[in-house]
Length: 234
Image (tube, rainbow, N blue to C red; front, side, top):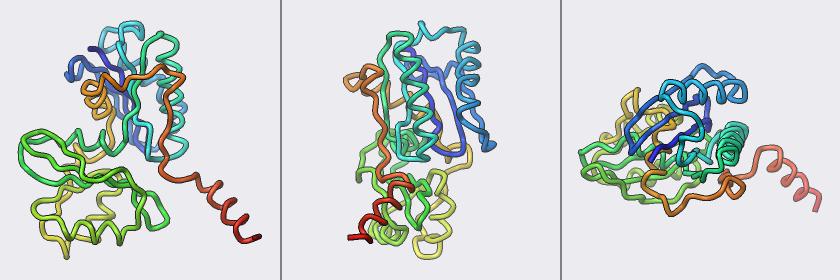
């Protein structure tokens, strides 16, 4: 099965073209450039280097949240457009789950996926990796840094922290949780390949482009502030 996957959930953006989990072509940019300007050229680049056109792709996958509200919207809109234009199904996967896929190693350890959600919060989910297989421990959540630290204190064994919020969390726990380590730099950041892996393993969850949705976990800042103002007026 040939998959084209996109991740634009944070500062980095990436596109991967895979066949049966094998990477045929990949494009990755982490320079803080505007996703709306870079994603489609990256898609064209990845397809060209894989020797394919959009019609050759069987399913289009994307990390549909959590993450940057603008970045997630751009990625989902791009995948919907590509899928509908090619009349092919698409697949949305948790950004945090996609991140965990990059750490499917053969050791047994806990993976703590974290994205900096600002306001002293993390978007986070915890997985256990055993012999290359993932087991989800928690749902995707937006929780305070202190709540997450208390949870990690209760985990036995090695904990690998990954994601764009990894260093922020690690600096808070390294002196109190000796088993916590940072993921290797080349595996730490969100990548489209993780979304392609999830798509390859979840064929039953493919949807038409018009049914693909985002999963923000919390309201955008503007909506949160408006809600707060309304509550204060009551």
